[in-house]
Length: 229
Image 1 (tube, one colour):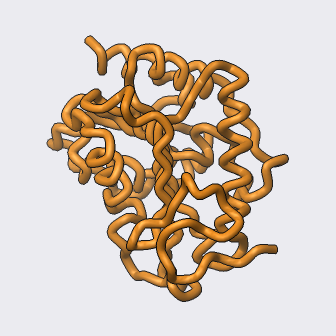
Image 2 (cartoon, rainbow, N blue to C red):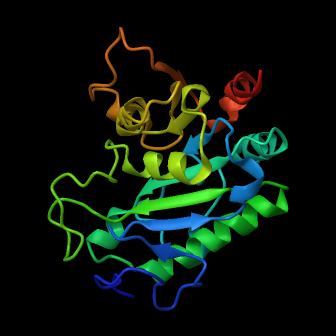
């Protein structure tokens, strides 16, 4: 088992140097930023939304796309809507796996999507968690959802049109992060953690944030169309 990277920022040992940790030790990966700047964005949680929830996914062979994920991402690509993954990775903060494991698994996900003609534009991953191993132990790190720090990174990097952007997630924390980040709305899917988190308080009913509950990411075709109308 590989252990988390140390406190130094920049390239991670054993990981492609096009990926880096920023000064808050958040994984940042931009894949095709020039083509999609200034557009509304589709923010996606990863586990339970793009790939099946297995609990601390960190081995490539366990990565399995959720039906419809590639199709929705491909549709966003065709509409020049950037697809931005924002994922909490508590397993790194807890020392269960390291950044090299995350990188290998993420590379597998990129490969699976590419086989169906789909491409992710950016990936942000936050390892911070209350009680985590140093240097990842934070009670409420601004990048850890439900805080919007990863969303803000994507907005800044790609000059996202925030008011027309959406998030898809399987936890109420994803919806809260989207609301706090100023997004138009969010789809709460049942394909991951699902109904076990419905008791969590979400954005206030009077909020302009449009939250909808759906079965899976396959139901996101409508919001992709809305973003480009």
